[in-house]
Length: 591
Image 1 (spheres, rainbow, N blue to C red):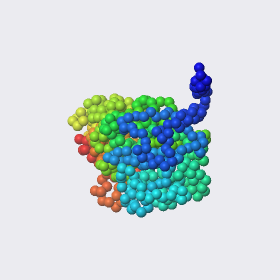
Image 2: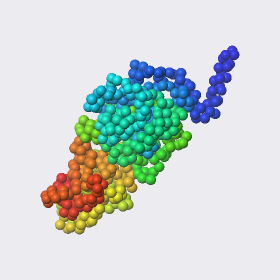
Image 3: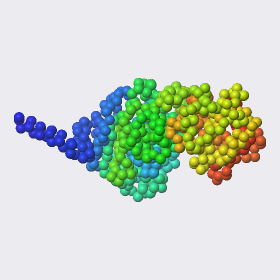
Image 4: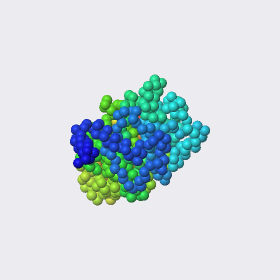
């Protein structure tokens, strides 16, 4: 054997043996050295790279590339390439609200699991001469370059500012804090920060006292909260999934925004192949892991960071049931609160992010919401996974009209009350039995319907009432699994409930369901005519009695406790007359 061949063989042997003895970080360093040889084909861009597709490898939307299970790790900040960010670019001009960034980094908001900061590593493109109205126009590429401001001359370039939930302009939207920091604030869930490179960002955010004061004042403290010492770079296309733990906000602000894209990927031009290689969500670990529907897992008292089985959180189960991301791998980022990770910044070759609350920002208009075809496809998949009917099953109900499976879902703390004035088996009224679900919102201690039970008892004891109604009261939806909540909504003919997050379960209701929503002031999403048309439902909102109004104006209304600002969170009562009139109206609609 020649000396050169023998040396190569020895080197190869030592490399194989060494891999088994090296620590994880050293293995990643070996991977890094291999990746360096690949050059810009895997996300390493020479200085001046502008993110143009002509400089990149191409892959069709329906093709998947293999996402490396481990990031490329730079433990020496001086060795980090000069990443040049680009975007946001609208993924599909026909379906706004999903955007792609390239070569950007994400931080974690220290107090909010929903918020992130996005570090944009090029001088920001911003035309101070363009009218604000023009800046908010939707285009295939946001903010076409007309003038580049010198980022290094802006001392607050790295300071994130809040983009409120009703931030209509998206990435280019106007916010008052923008004037103070000299740059745009970004998306609702991804707040913008700018720097010339990672070292510049680290210095700007941590070493300039005025910036630290602003960040503290606005509640925008980010992790890493100390100077950056290492960078983890993830290849491929990664989707940032940011949603609120409140299931109502998760449904109204995230699901309704994402569904049109899900449909396009699964049934439309995507042909069932999702152009997503990995998913990150620092809200809940293992959100996409485990089985599709965890029937027997309680919805409370669960460690959100568990890695055993699927996360039982309501929205995670919805996402799993519809295979929301086409089997894309969940990237489990290290715990940002781990002191060992507090100096690590996570960066991405291609990052997809939603304009969260897109429908809300546009008044739940037809153009901003999923259309009927999309929503029917979503519900077909959802109902199939949960094994529930799309139409009422009154013929299956025994003893007054509640199906056996829904009776099993009532559990402790729930009461089933027979229709008023008649025995359960009385068939003197030829109208079918109707099931009405009631909820007073007691667990929250605010926005509580304080006399619901007494009103119901009085109605039950009034033998003059001849309605075929089965009442079912719920004390706390949080005590029930997602499947149990779904069954309760799926089996009812009408819901009479205080405004709250539990209304997200309306996605499980069947066509023709009646919703009565109560609240002294109702910031209702459920009452949107666009949404009601998607679920084929009827709706009545009951609010505070008009002060000084006549009797006709206050037939069905609420007596609210006074509150300084407004009535949104006030507790309330209802007169027996209003309660009886409300039930008569509901039954007239159902019958």
